[in-house]
Length: 176
Image 1 (cartoon, rainbow, N blue to C red):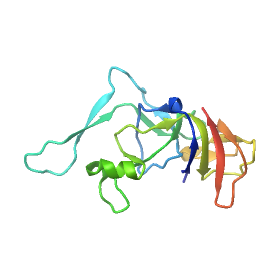
Image 2 (cartoon, one colour):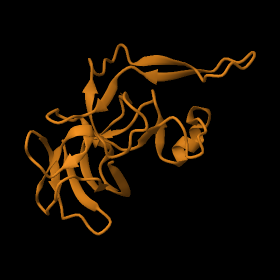
Image 3 (cartoon, rainbow, N blue to C red):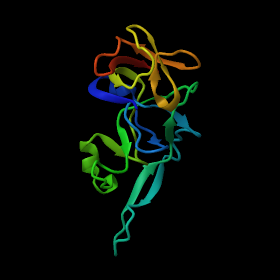
Image 4 (cartoon, rainbow, N blue to C red):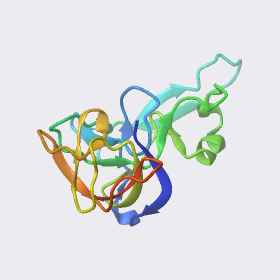
């Protein structure tokens, strides 16, 4: 499973904030994603996610989301970028985050249906790389949106700036 450390060096102009995540939850930050379906259309960008769920008397609480979706990139598929936040429905205690957006922001995640930031370029500390990353080696996207050092059938997504350290993290220069 991929994940990112807080060390990140990227420019906000390289972050796309137009898509929601579509797929099995939770999705972790550092996962490579691709555009799903027809992508983003400026004339049809907002959708109703429905109410918050439970039937509370005399309460209307509609939630808005976006129609454009990204999903996990597989082997041989060109990724749009990498998730900057986790996508979750519940926190560590099983409480639904749609009732507590402040908590979602505090733990660095977004609720499904809402926009998830996708970064296309930058330098990151990445865990979960497959193969044996080496300094200057090419990083490739593979099944389940994970980054690998193996080229066979995979699309190049950047470069490794060094080998993996003792805790399994590698410094990655993403360039999509």
